[in-house]
Amino acid sequence: MFLSSSFKDVVGLFEKFAGDDQKGKTVTFIPTASLAETEKFYVLEARKAFEKIGIVVDELEISKATEEDISDKLRTNHYIYITGGNTFYLLQELKRTGADEIIKEQLSLGKLYIGESAGSMITSPDIEYVALMDDKTKAPNLRSCSALHMVDFYPVPHHTNFPFTKTVEKIIHEYGSKLDLYPINNNQAIVVDGSDVSIEAK
Image (tube, rainbow, N blue to C red; front, top):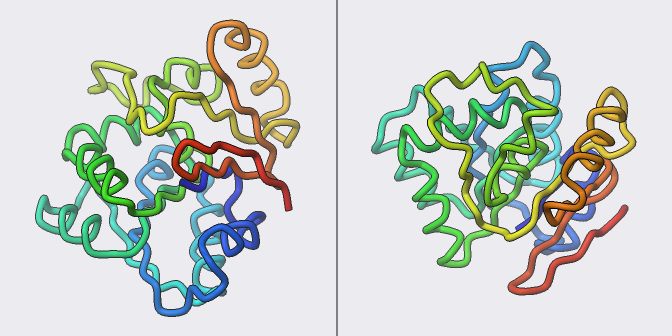
């Protein structure tokens, strides 16, 4: 797993982790979290970052996709990537469509998962801690904050980065003694390789 705050800023670290020769590989690119936000520039930047290293972007907007498309794209492409945006809306749609279970299945089979911001936080056991950063009301049909639980820790993106500086400090102050938080800035990534977890910086 490769969990980031800002994928475009650490694409070099991704190449180091995944291998230099990425040309022709395919990524299921899920921008769904961004639909609940007004700012979406990071989606285009991530797409460009993938294309720059030769990865073919296959977009999957799960809130509108068919069950067949969701299954086919998540299972067929080499990688799965989820953008930033509203983590609660993202979790709502992953659960509603069943994409959450397919993603976990594919990870158990060895597929590489790439997260950015919301896409990183969604891998934690529960996203209640994200309420200090994201608006929960954007996901009115979300019944539980239990998340994908693909890791046992809690990523906290954008540490020390504007405009999230104060928000991240509030999360650390509120949850630092309760949860195993992993704060990362925009130039860092959490790399999970089996049972090994490390924070890498460019």
